[in-house]
Every structure is written in C-alpha cells, then in structure tokens.
Image (cartoon, one colour):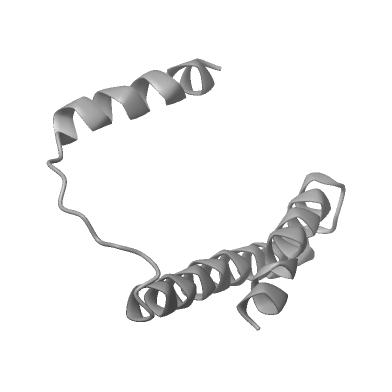
Length: 86
C-alpha cells in the first residue's frame, strides 16, 4: 500500500512546479504555494511512515556513524555555490 500512496506524490509535486512556472493569475499564487507546501509536507510524512515501518519490521539496521558537520557543510556549500552565484 505504501508504494501506491507514495508513487504519485512526486508526479503531483512536479505538476505543481510546472503550473507555477507557467503564467497564472496573481490570485492563484497563494493557492499554488499552499498546494506545493502541503504536497512537500505529505511526501516527507509518507517517507517517514515508510521508514518507521522498515525499521519496525527489522528490514533495516541502524548503525552509528560519526558526523563531521563542518565538513558536511563545506560539501553542501560547494554543491550550491554555482547556483547561488547565478
């Protein structure tokens, strides 16, 4: 059932992005933004529910790894730098 619910959500999000890029009335902007925000939040919630199910059924192992936030942040900044400069 998870697949049937999760699969159409990225398509819906993509269609909303296309609608947002096309010409539309200023009065429609609020509705488009609300739909996109709610779609994004629903995708996150569905993915979280799926992850919890996988963890509870022990189909995934949780491992402990060390994090280096400064290094990770540097990588993210490098990835986004060209987009930010544009």
